[in-house]
Length: 106
Image (cartoon, rainbow, N blue to C red; front, side, top):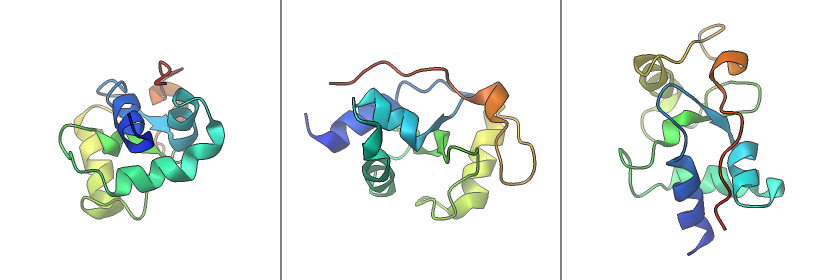
């Protein structure tokens, strides 16, 4: 399995109504330093709708300005539709919506 395939498998584990940070997804791959690789993999996600990349946000809860499938507004819209709560227009309430841990994908 390639690194990108591992990213997609990890992201599929984020439940609806929850989010994870890029670093959390990288930790699920066994290396927290891969957070930028996670971001790139999600930017080129060949499986939109199957791999819920909209559930991955910055560690401070901000949505991604460069969200590949319609921009930050679209990412926030998708998250709100799943019941994710926000502190303001662009920041997810991480205390309420962040997954505690993702299973390892090795």
